[in-house]
Image 1 (tube, rainbow, N blue to C red):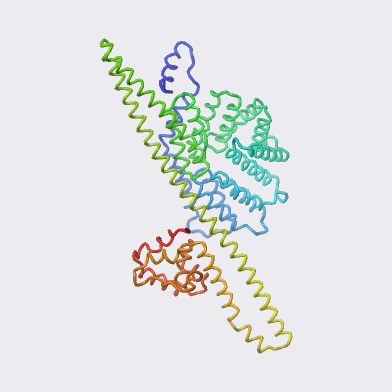
Image 2 (image 1 turned 60 degrees about the vertical axis):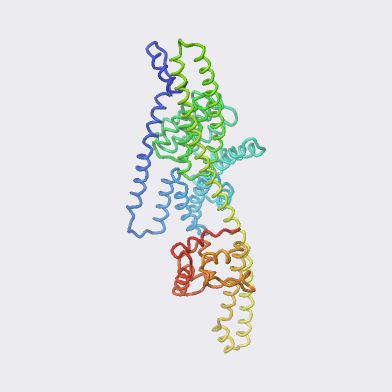
Length: 542
């Protein structure tokens, strides 16, 4: 029996004084909001666009840019991962290494949050290590400790059923204690962390009372409301109260949909409850919506979480299909034996056949969704492998090159000091005027760049030759496995994501006109001139 059939049954009993489920109206509200998904998304986009249009054509001060980036981050943080990352990254880069540690800390904490929700735990931990909490105000310390606690909670989610789970929970508890020591007792930070702390200690009743009392101060459609209701659902789950858990998950999901909050977990958890109740169609409906929103937001962590449920859904549908087939055979046997109920059995058989067909179609759709997810995850993993390989190679090269340049600079400085000390002014002037030292540094840079790049892309020259016409391919030489020509260096920088002519000219110590000329000639020699540089960017590391 589906959930909608149950609702009709409860409504019939209402006249006899038997109350229907309190959650029926909440399901209706949630379904209505999901049906208006596109409109709510458009309203969110319009609100963000209005912020950007108000400053269009205005030159902002660094402080105004900081405030604008913070505001846009707040708009995107639970809406789109990549946009939120883009704006907070601008603040982190602008403030890193400056004396303004307070604002850097505020940006770093937000950066850690956006990295955590995407499952990039190590990067989140590293940026939090750049923050010195002892130098912060109490308000900033609370934000910092909240993020440390949140990071450990996300890590515990991914470490369930392992020895690390308890360690991460204990770390989260530690930071909750630090927050409770400095946060005002009537603040959300204190109440939320106190409730989660005592719940973990085993006092769920008190934790629930604290959050339910505080919830009346919040507004549906806000991120805070969604978090508090989702946490209450978790507390009731620990108590085994499935009805209240379902109710608060519904409230959290409704708040998420109303506020266009795409970084959410309630729909997925709600589909798990419906699946346990046997409402597979409804579970599938909400799971597909959860997958769609996780993909829209761009969080690998949420995609992995909803992906874990897919085998369970497929198994349930396989069982349902098997039961349908078995029932079909039973009814066909009954048809041959009991002619008086032939019409009724034929009707039921047709209904079961349609249900089987619908179930098969749903399984097919879900398989397509899973295939798309796997392709996306595989692509992301390959990109991360390539980025890590490039990072490791160039960090080592950078350190070696920096060390060599420092050593050369020290030796050159000593030589100049000797000339100055011996008052050999003409020799000193000649040495200062000479470009030999600079040219040597450029050659060293080119050598290190070429070797590092060819270590990462050993087949780069041969792959480029595949893109060139037969008469214009680069001829191999004795040192072609160690050194690049100027044309190949330009293509190498394009492969690394640097496509601006001025940036390429600055890196290669050349004029922008020269770079433009080289790129034009290379395109002219390519097999596919218009897409040549795009094809260069797709050359793999191995």
